[in-house]
Length: 114
Length: 117
Image (cartoon, rainbow over all chains, first blue to last red; front, top):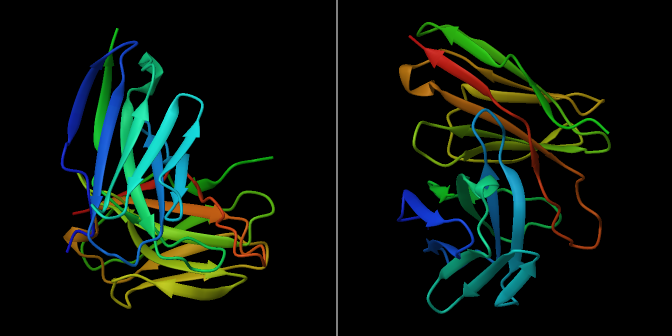
């Protein structure tokens, strides 16, 4: 039972344009969402998060949008840079005081074309 | 400040054997979580340790066990290895509960790639 889904296994975007990565979830108990980025031979690196009390969180070039009614979130990267080429994982958590037990999606491989 | 480290980086075992994977948490972190990432999949939560006690477990059989030591380093042990145990095993540490309900970010190590033949 895949509770967090990333339906696009891969995405190619021209350098300088906007990259939009999508994620859907089925468990309405999830109330905290994160995006991680993973380079080959490295562990996932935290990128940005959003609590269910918000619908948008922005950090520099990265913005995460949350649509609770649709159980959908998206990560926008503007402008896209070659260093953004990586696998992006969406993850979700039920509020568990202080610590995270994350449920991950299957990932989207983003390739930025120079 | 050193990050999360894991050893070994790669490991080959045969079916039925036992394996121990090690993780050294980031300085000051008292919580460690272990994840299994099969090929083409996202990481799956195995279990979490907080101050040497198990603090939650995912849908993994009892032959997956763990330990956390007083210095907050950790081990993942897998007994009676099966072919499907072949995966990247990730360890993640976090500062632990702040007492204020603040979500703490997990920091991942590079992983141990286990191949079971």
